[in-house]
Length: 111
Length: 113
Image 1 (tube, rainbow over the protein chains, first blue to last red):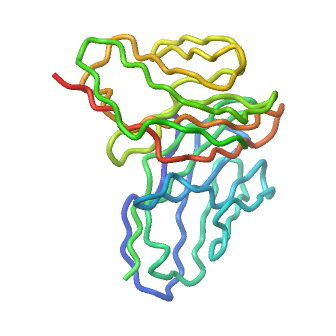
Image 2 (tube, rainbow over the protein chains, first blue to last red; image 1 turned 90 degrees about the horizontal axis):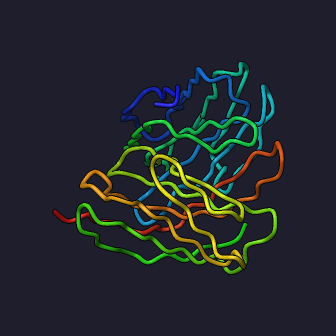
């Protein structure tokens, strides 16, 4: 939907391991975003990008890093995963002055 | 960004119009009103947005009061597939800026057969 692919769709890993989630877009949009969604909370912004190699922190950025070396790919990395990072992660994209469109999500479980 | 207030839940009969209200009394002049919905555990789906004029698209209509302190999303003929959590979001609409959306708890709309 809306030219966004998140991978993997599901992942189970252990505490302390590094994890990288990928968001790939085919729309050539400028803006890309990573959100997480937990029970009892709405979506919360982790990091966003406003261009290649241009990123900034969102509301809940601690423990996460991002990279965008190409327009189409926005990577979210958990350097050393913790159980509190078990969540559903959504990527969104937006063109200039356009609304955000979301991917189907990645369900991440950290044991 | 301004905060929004929505009812926790609403029911609507299938085939009838669903009217979802949202209060955003602290909205500022350059903030837009966005509506998204989330069906079960899927990604949020964009519905519609507006600044001060009423808007309509193939999915819904958005009515914004003249003072912009509240708005209503209207689904003209609700179907069972419209059962979802609906989020009203107010976000800065500065030209060319990366808009950060703040999702609240939303309204759980249940369409009844």
